[in-house]
Length: 397
Image (tube, rainbow, N blue to C red):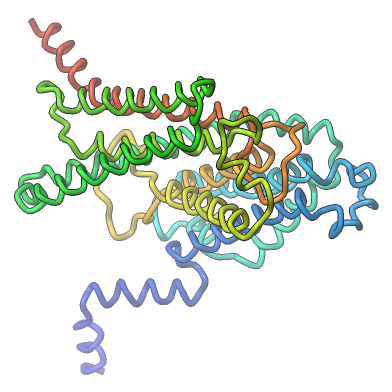
């Protein structure tokens, strides 16, 4: 007995912790593994929505028997996407309501979030089927609400990306890593600026080949102006935010501008790349698959970044949950609205071509506004501390 007791007492805390995580994994209640299962559910819902839009007429003929479909008209195309999206949204908003506020691993809601997969798979299937029985008016109402929900998702994603860039810059500027990171920061920033300039030049060549392409010229030129503005504010002596953050933000806004112009519908001589991909070929298919995977990865990475949205930074303990479950599911719920908007071009009455995503003038302007909002949020995060300090100094005097 003594030898058994001594052997158990000699186990290190890390070993006990690892064994507890292993037991949770065996019981299907590992919160780290649960993230990937939810991401898989989200991916399957996205693919179902895409299948309903592009291949529903040939593969889903049984929908004629469903009451809410009125023949196949209301369960395919844009409404088919919205119906699948509604089922995905309902699933994740239910998970949000049932897990919001979970803080400790020993709470029953932690087991609900990380386990009970048989029940949740059945629940997800049920939530996917129920919208097929609803009348078209409810689906159209959900489509209007999804415009707002998708916008909320873009704002959350935007704040998460900017917070990551700020965190990376603070890490490199800290006393512990300053000397070691200085050369790497300069190389990374220089590379980022070179990529930004090359991207802007290519956009001028591909999307503004003629002086009549005034809108594209405005988009690209204004992006260059915003890049210069972010750099100037970041290097101002009162801000002193360094060169890395404006360089990485420049990559982000140039990428958004490129996506916005790529979303323009085919027509005229100002979008030759879109005309080149008008026919469905292997490059179009690969682009579509990459876009879908990028959307799922973006939703996943944003969902686990709940610490960026905490007003009070508390120290984490071993018994605390590794990430905010409620925030995680809320991001996926708004992400369900977002993928619906991408698949229908932000327009419930817009006919989308096969193997396309996020195409149309509405999509273009959503991207452009998102770019401008990103710059405004970034500049505010730089200037706000200075404004608050000056106000506090004025009040104290």
